Length: 115
Image 1 (cartoon, rainbow, N blue to C red):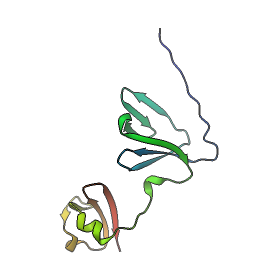
Image 2: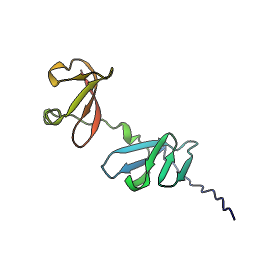
Image 3: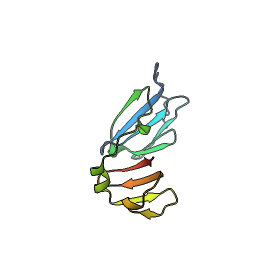
Image 4: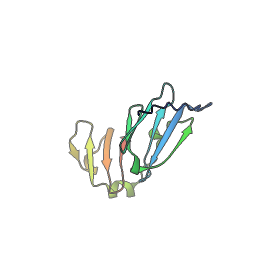
């Protein structure tokens, strides 16, 4: 016997569903024409894929929280284990000029704009 079910959810006025992982990182997916599938221990929501055991919570919101902008302090850069330019070249703090960089610390990886 095969059971097929369809779950329909109404997001009301919300435009995104945000998934928060156990490490605090967030990914937001637009709810317009959203499809979600679960296969084994994996959840696919739109273009994002998550391991279910890594999910802390999910909720509807009106903002894309995965593109939130945080201020980077000198202490954060001092913790940086690795810094890369957009071409993938590893650079040091002193080599950073105007541009966009990928900064990796012990706890997270983020993009940074130097103006």
